[in-house]
Image 1: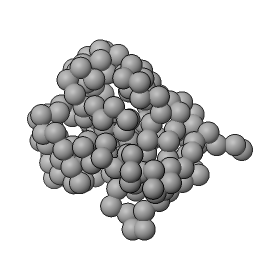
Image 2: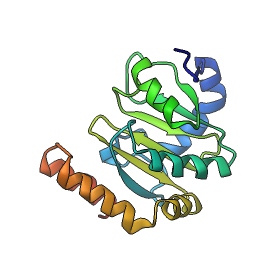
Image 3: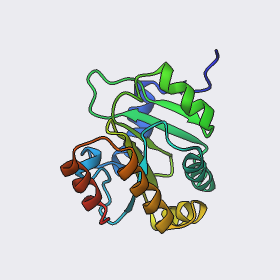
Length: 177
């Protein structure tokens, strides 16, 4: 099987993408406030890298409007780090890389060159999407509104999420839900 992603060498990441990555992400884990900009709204999304296809599609459409033509994925807090990868906006390719890399096994960051948004896939079966107001408004509109996003996540919390209740409360409190 031929995978449709490319590895980003360390030099390219450090000289071109590190500034963007570090401008988006705070250096803290998802449950501790993962985004540098504290004013960014955060949506909690069910699942991790195996996210729902319509959710991935909404993020993809919105990112591509910003000319983020590929999704950059980098592991977080892993030693030694795996090389970051660039992935086309294709849900099937995202599914394929889960078996071909270790990025789905660890907390990972997704972002685009615009630096206007970020996505954190956790090891705890949820994701955090954060971004500038216009980005988040568009994603919300494509997914049926903020209430639908919250409703979907709460359904996931009550029916599927298998983590301690205290941790659930901390995550929900972080985003004001």
